[in-house]
Image (cartoon, rainbow, N blue to C red; front, side, top):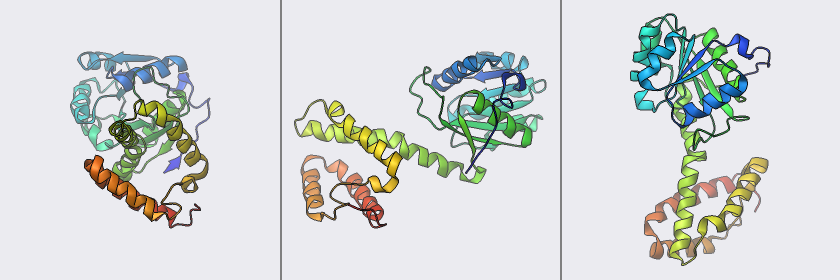
Length: 264
């Protein structure tokens, strides 16, 4: 993955065409807010008004669930031209999801904020942003949009998109699943307010990892304290057997990381 550099003049509102943002959900709303802040000419449209908005724009950015990208793209094909560029914001889907737009003569691109977006008020400023394009113009537009939205663009090879998105899901979505599992385990131990109690530990661990990488690993596995690990396993077998496989898999991964020279 290669980080792309575009200066503020290259990414100014004057160099970016009018954009129709198709999909008024969480990400579409967040992008619309970022576009307003950047002074872009941007229209937020639902799927029923997408074609009309696209006819008045030079570019369209599809912000819908992955399984709806192809149909949303097909609906925009009637606006090509004057519509010149069509993009989507999926992390896992590639340029081929926009095949109908490309077949109609548009340049296609992707723009995926590497950030969690819980609602339409999410702040995208400072987040990395994965981009790709069917050609130099499309890639330049995706890059300029990312910069205008306040993000840091980097390029992801088409063949690596699924792996890239799996990494993002592990770092974000599955982290939430993991922490909720810890909260549930505390609840079964008779301890209330698990999220409040664990939050400082989680945040400090994340900060340590951001600063130190694998050297942030602490705890019984980093200390080679297998006796304590065994007590965890016995406790899980009795209290939360459905979490045992998760614990064993993560413990094995932690052993591999600790075995790479990570100090206890």
